Length: 114
Image (tube, rainbow, N blue to C red):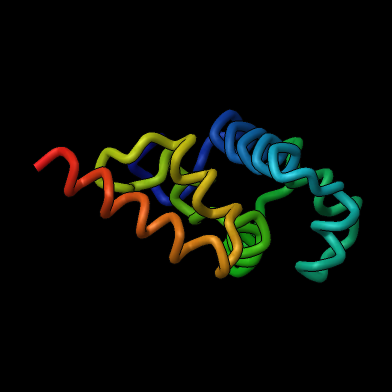
């Protein structure tokens, strides 16, 4: 990305592609996402195609709905201390009932290595 505050058309297109890709990976329709964040399907389509530029508020709402962080859409990566993206994605798709079991498994693996 460039260092100015203004992004290029190509950068907006990349952001839109990342939004679309993430939406599809979690199995959400474009119209569903648009409804949840309170914008029209037409506007959502234009964002995904890089034709319209979402506000920071809209990027945050999209991030919340798609269980990721704004830096994934804006930068193409999530800052996770080198945890592979597929693991982060899998964890974000778990519900609160799964997390204690996952934490126990992680602790088990860590103890086994030591």
